[in-house]
Every structure is written in C-alpha cells, then in structure tokens.
Image (cartoon, rainbow, N blue to C red; front, side, top):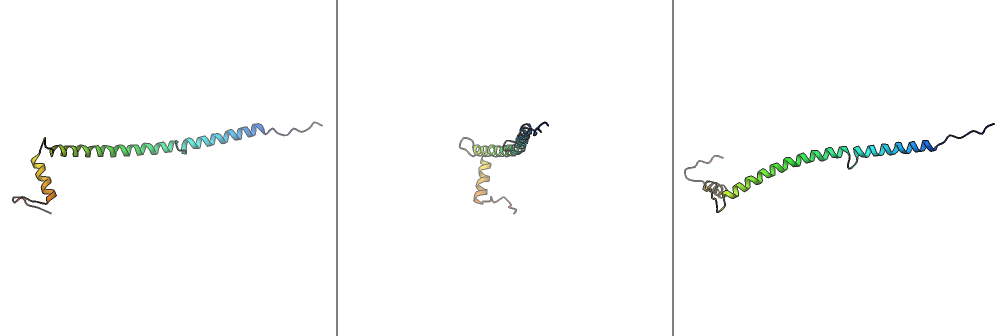
Length: 99
C-alpha cells in the first residue's frame, strides 16, 4: 500500500495571507486616513474655506477703502459726517428719522 499524502497547507496559507493583505490594503485605500473618502472630505472643506476666504478678502478690501477715505491724505466729508452721526446718534435739523 502506498502511504497517503496529507494535503499541502503551504499554498493555502500563502493565498489566505495574500487575500487578507489585499482586503486590508483595499479597505485602507478607501476608508483610511489617506483614503478616497477622506480626500473627498478634504476637497469639500477646501471649497468651503475658499469661499470663506473670498468673502473675508472682500470685507478687508471694503474696510481698507473706508479707512483710506477717512485718512488724513484723503478725507471724504460725507463719509465722516455719516459715521459721526451714526456713532454719536446726532441728526441734522433738516433730516427726518424713520425707525
């Protein structure tokens, strides 16, 4: 009688480990810290921050314009009068105030 050979588990273990590693790296590529979903979140956050930056730059430009108009080099009397009346609460005699 010929002795029975037991099945070789080496290739089976190799393919099981290779399959497990493939699953792990695929999961990490999609769900991990540097995966596709995280990249989509970062891109959405980048768009939101870009819109916020544009808004803030517009506000800064407006403030710079107002500051320039109130500076000693270029004094806009209408703007100065408007700001003084707004801050101090004064009204000219010929104006009508509606609240």
